[in-house]
Length: 162
Image 1: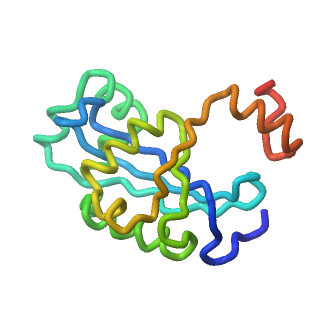
Image 2: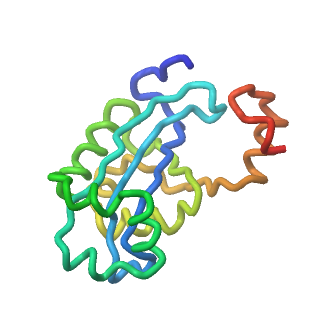
Image 3: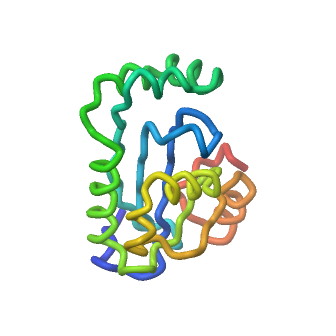
């Protein structure tokens, strides 16, 4: 795929969070991954994928579903081994966004992005204070992807989705 020009406007900022649970007041981000595409999904830049260190007390507060899934995937062990704080992860994400998104122009996109957006707002406020994510979101689900496949006729999608 072609590269995105520095500081393009109206880019989709794809975010995927793994969290210790879905209670936004009790749980926290344990992994954050970012990628950027243009709106037509023709240009792509893979951003950081960061596992965040947390002490055992945070891991003990995980809900059952998260504990089971993150144990199966190996994420819990990666959390224990990581030396990256949430603050450092946030700084890394902001530095990445600054390279490609003019302030206030990145449109947050992803699956279950509204939950992720609130968790980023609560836990990584500097991303919002720096206004690198525009106040607009694209909730991506199978039906949207199928519509994009038809509209853009882009061969980057797997035909098995249709």
